[in-house]
Amino acid sequence: MEVVDAPGGPGALVVAVHVPGPGYTAGLVRGDVLLGLGVDAIGSASDLAALVADARPGRELRVKVRHDGGGRQDLTVVPGVVT
Image 1 (cartoon, rainbow, N blue to C red):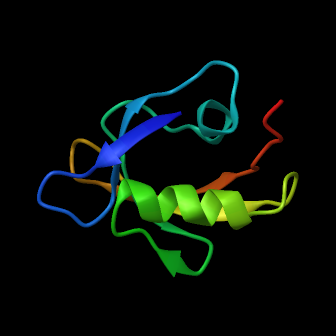
Image 2: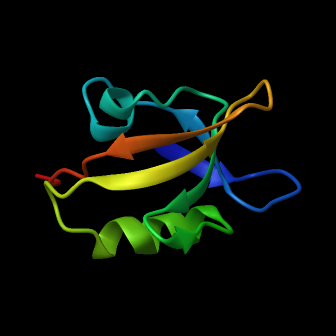
Image 3: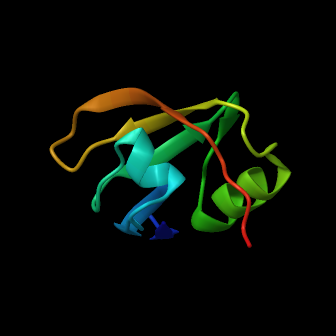
């Protein structure tokens, strides 16, 4: 998955979802804005990168998402191992 800072912030805007991958499996799509991971808020793309780096591979996390149409949803994501 690739993200950039959400225009007008806060959050991380999804600009690409890799298939297969944790974001794709969780149901994320291009245009979603990630607002939280676990109990932590996401203010920017760099915030998300730091949170993912600290996440334990294989352990489920809740991600708070604002969809392109404005709806909000909590999804479950399972971070993987980068090889």
